[in-house]
Amino acid sequence: MNGVLVLAGTPIGDVADAPPRLAQELASADVVAAEDTRRLRRLTAALGVVPTGRIVSYFEGNEAARTPELVDALTGGARVLLVTDAGMPSVSDPGYRLVAAAVEKDVRVTAVPGPSAVLTALALSGLPVDRFCFEGFLPRKAGERMSRLKEVADERRTLVYFEAPHRLDDTLAAMAAAFGDGRRAAVCRELTKTYEEVRRGTLGELAAWAAEGVRGEITVVVEGAEPPGPQDLGPGELARRVALREEAGERRKEAIAAVAAEAGLPKREVFDAVVAAKNAAAGG
Image (cartoon, rainbow, N blue to C red; front, side):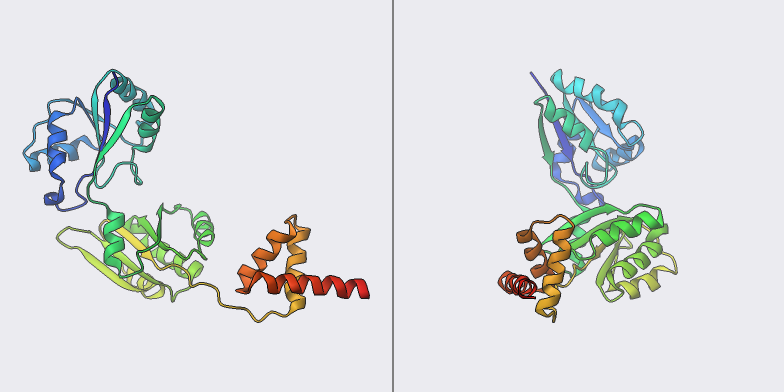
């Protein structure tokens, strides 16, 4: 009979935020897979817990090799607890590979919900929280980073990123260039820790602030793009844009819908412009 894989959230700062079930799971799991076994020892000491199961490391460097071993333990009936350095496993941390492998073997996967830097930063940012998307860490290389940012420049949902403190100034400057330096954002530093700070402002203001150097664990929350307003495009220009999309391989229906969305106009108005252009061409 298969065992159970338990994904456990750990404190992102204040150890008092640890969920009560975390101590129970640490004490009773057959195997505890930890991103950093030294941090695990500090956590168990702070919680007054003595694990009775086997402790193994599970981090980016050995994730691929160790996953089959843990899956074997799970299919053999073991209760495996997965913890990362802070927050929930799989969220920009090891875990996804093991979850996918466990699911493939019909192993039950459950969780001990815990602190999340993503949700904490989002709630504290003062930016809209009804719709958001998590983008994780941006690429380190400037060109790749800018390409990734341009992909979401028109995203209307609030964006959440993780970033290393020594790259924060470059990242905020790139965001200001890709999104506009007037876009609102918040830099959340050292969440739930002694020196917690939430710095709010425009991307331009935050980039200037970060240029002086920032320390600590960083989460960046960025306001989504404003919805496009109606553009003052004449019928001829609307028809031309549809024709260009058709030439690129789009079906007319999809091309009309796309141009209408770009211009902030009803699809019927764009359709009428296309018909008028066709009639004018036929008459000429």
